[in-house]
Every structure is written in C-alpha cells, then in structure tokens.
Image 1 (cartoon, rainbow, N blue to C red):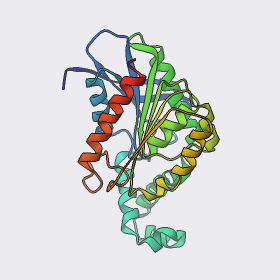
Image 2: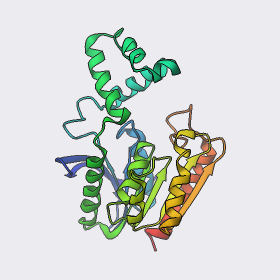
Image 3: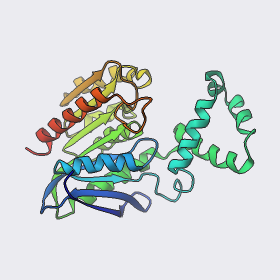
Image 4: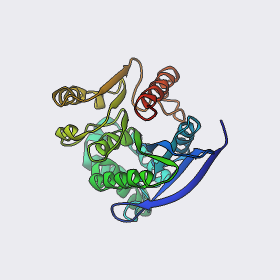
Length: 272
C-alpha cells in the first residue's frame, strides 16, 4: 500500500463536533472523496483499513465516528457493542423474542454491567437518533466539499450494515455524486428515494434474509423514480460478508468481487 496521509479530526455535526478518521494519498488535489460509514460496531480498525484501501486507490476517505457525540460515546464503545452482541447470541431465539426473558438473563449479571449493557442494547435495537446521525453525515459532505484537496461535487458514500442504511439515507438528503450500500436497510420512509441525486450501487448476500425481504420495495421505488441503480446479490453470502475480521461471515470471493464492483462504480461516478 502506498504511503498515505492519515489524521484524526473533527467536523461540525448536527449536535456538535463529530470525530472522524481521514486517509488520503500523499499528492496534491483536488481528488474525489468517499465517506466510509461504519457498521453497528462503530469506527474500529476494520473500517479505518477500508478507508485506507480507498485512499490507496486515489480517493480522500473520511470515516466518521457516529457514536462520538456525548449522548452515545459513554456506552457505544467497540468493547460494549461486542459485549452486547455476545450477550444477545448467548440467548435462545425464544429468549431474544421475549423481553421478560431477556430481562431475567440480564438480572443475572452484576448491576453495573447490567446498566451499561441495557443502554447499549437499547441503542442497537432502534434507540439511536438516526435522523440526527444522518445530518452528521451531511456535515461530513459539507466538510469534504470545503477542503482544498477534495474535488468539490465529487463526494460519494459507502456504508456497511448499519452504515449501509445510513449511506442511502444520506443520499436522500445530500448532494452526493455516488452512493454504495453494503447490505443496508431501506430509507424510511422509502419514498425519500425520489430525492436521491446520484447513481446507487447495492451489494447484498443471498442468505441475508432480514435485509433482503425489503429489497423488492427498494427496486419498486427505484423503478418508479427512474434512478440509476446497480444491484448484485451473492449466493452463499450472509450479512456482513465483506468484513474480513469476522471469519464466521466473511466470504472472500464475494468480498473481492464486491470491491472490484465498487471501484468500477466510483471510476464511473467520481472519476469521470
């Protein structure tokens, strides 16, 4: 990998400064830029490595930490999120579906551990201020467009899992030049797709039934609003197949193909 310029910085967000990781080539700009939006696990070394991969391809890559705001930072840490995921997977499907059974399992833990775990799980289960977090990402677009090393108007997004949904939600609000969704949820309400100004690339695992059950609705509005849309569904791949730090879900062949598709897509949309 070529030498890169890396930095941790902050940019103005919806409720205050948003911390972010920036990676870019050691060359004069202006260059196209990509906002790399993290999974539910937050801004961790894996997402930073993905940003570096884009920087090595000639892009300015900005990876915001959407959990850096004061209302989320104390408990939405990578360690707490991992702990919450492990706790959830320790429950039977019946326990996961029964709030009372989940509470009973929580009560077996030390009280301090319970409190942190409850806050983290509540945020991960729909308790995050998503509209405000999307506005943080709009701030990331504004920040990049204002930098002398960025080609203004040539900013794209890519997101994974939670970040995939945030990527397409951002495209509904911001003047992006390209949007990539890795196995992310649809915008809510889905009619917001009408406002997307840019081409969209969607990448999904065929075994990711929770996400894929709603893909027909996305395709319907894409057709209705006549958007530029590419989609690839990978047989034998589950949710998070691109994450090479999680061997239980990582699928090398689909991940490699998806990466090449993203580069071709960005070559068309961000490097015309």
